[in-house]
Image (tube, rainbow, N blue to C red; front, top):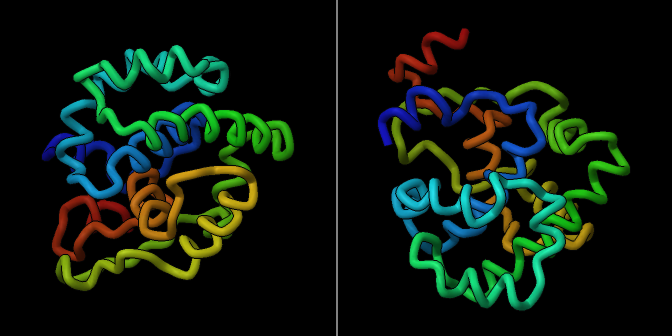
Length: 174
């Protein structure tokens, strides 16, 4: 968890495959702890072809049944089924915007929103931007993209920087 915090969380992402990875992982995390998902990240990378949305979009019912038997991932039927649906919607966004990166950064006007909360209780579970993102993703056919999941996705991918004001990452980022 410490390495993830220090080197990944809140760092701006501009790689479409990484965005797709975090969409899958944040959706899988719904109702669970992030530590649970992080511990299973390697198994997710293998099960979901290194988060290749083209391959995941082709998942069949047989693939989904196979994944339900994989103890290395979270075996929730709806979460697994949503990955193929989300991959298809992800590819449509890439077609329309030329990249998912161009699409997703519009929710923060192309620049990370830096909050610098003083304590964990100051970190909100969602924001007006995550509300808009959630609504737009749902209209585009995504599942497991409620506002709270979208906010966690925004934090993980650096669209929002919620490192505490006392955190060295926050202080080193201007």
